[in-house]
Image 1 (cartoon, rainbow, N blue to C red):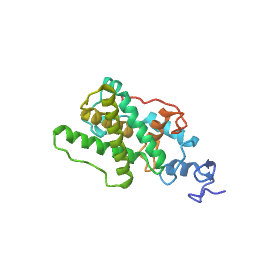
Image 2: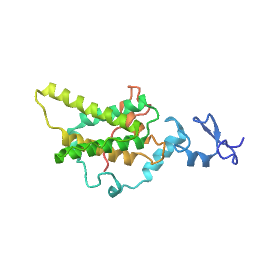
Image 3: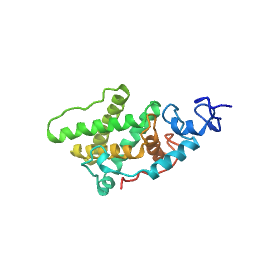
Image 4: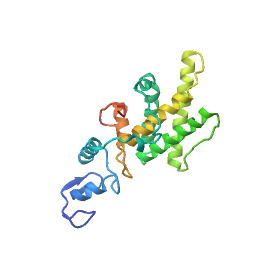
Length: 212
């Protein structure tokens, strides 16, 4: 049978999103663009691994390119990084339409908000999109709860504004590196979800890696 997308070439690859076979060319060009691919699609997973391996990292093209987060800082703030990553994954679980670009835009906006706090001139960079604004708010609440829990545990309030900014910058940069840039890409989201195996947030295992 002909591919249902191009109606020209023969459908040879079973597409779980379309629930029928499509041609290899349409699979390659339309995955995570016009096709909302499920995470467990074999062709999707293979293409993500291939795309990531062949990409070269140009830090000048990263958001906040002037900022390099040291490995030691990430190690010291692993609990904070985990808390925010989990908040992102839970948001994606509750709002399946969330994609990588939404996550990157939200973490970048919140990082910029915390950067203004560093200068003493507070200016909130809340996104205009409802979906991104909701995630922005979720991350704000996660940071607030993290600080409240830490204050209760240690008995004093620690100024975490710069730490929050730096971790948000790292997540923004990591998302830019891990996402494949397609309009419906969830490569970064699935990468984060893989760190919470057993918590119904993702089927595969992995670990959060550094940008270097």
